[in-house]
Image (cartoon, rainbow, N blue to C red; front, side, top):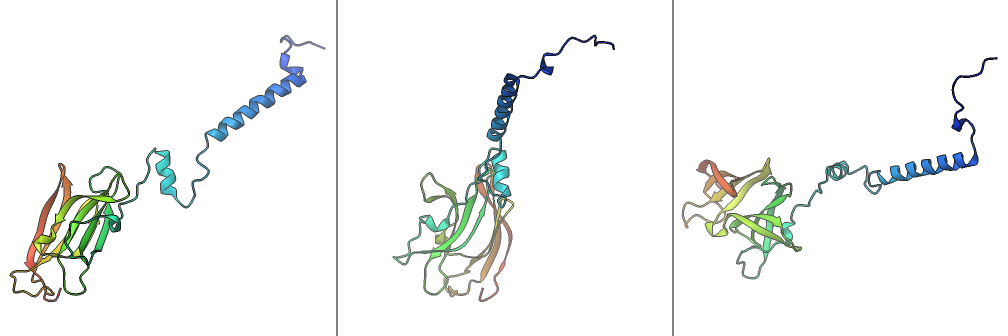
Length: 196
């Protein structure tokens, strides 16, 4: 029989101390793996939240227009948020809300204001831009926010003799955030259909 030319290996003779050292090393690996796992409280039903967490961002909620104070003089009847749409208008990854607001009149067509809201440091959102002032005596028809562009149909009156129920002028406009301000572009100006 020929003997091996290799030296005797120390690990071929196992002792209880070797097993304890191996068990301790394995326990350390398992503990470290547990610390590096994603948050177990994240739900599989919210993939956008877990993806945002992996990228180090938090998805903020759009401001609630019902909690904002509007510069409307409504004589004690309060205001109505007629339309609203959220969107990240300035590209800062925090959504704003665009709100169409008018006095809570029982009848007629009260003039509307169009406001851009951002979430303030407190609970109430704050107005950062007034796109349509109610003093302009306009109401708002179609209204959308898409791809950082606000689109609306402005309904107005050619004279004070036109009944408030039936605006006779219409203008399609857009606003887009450019160089620190909302820039308004008119798409068309045409007479409104009666009764709109």
